[in-house]
Image (cartoon, rainbow, N blue to C red; front, side, top):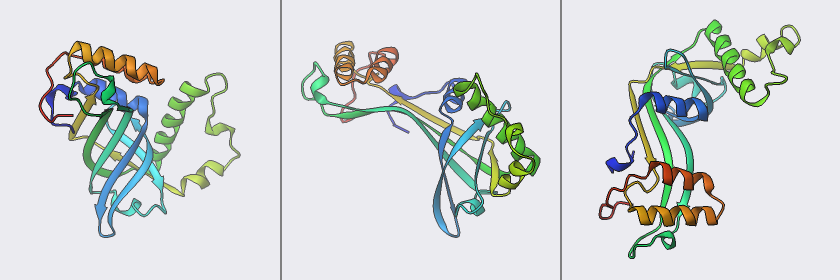
Length: 209
């Protein structure tokens, strides 16, 4: 995570809410076959654990259980031109928000995997297909069970969570205002809103982009 404390994000409930809303992660592991990364949808459970599933044939699948995993979840991001500042002697940078979660992976039982799939699809259907939500009841008997044999589920209990929101909080109000105007000028209104909402007016640190 970025070392400047102006960008530090510490509200655990808010962070997990971001993970829940983003619902997709890069999951890093290391084993006998070397480092690997899985790209997978994730579910934040009521117990604040992170669950996901991967194809059994994924080369990382065999090294997720019992090993320490690092999950990376990213959200809004964009380039920042130095032309968008009022102050002189500025350099380009990048706006972004990111969360890192560490914990040991545990393989889900078959029953737990089914619950994960049901809960994940229910949450996504609620977002994207409320009028006609999909459920596995729409599948022919035996089809769902056959397909689940090709995947394996995992759970991570977070023992470390780190998060950054870097949207020019350390710049002056004038520079943040100019930044927001520049971002909107190139169609990045969502990033401009983040700059406006998170700006704190802290003074810029030398060589801290």
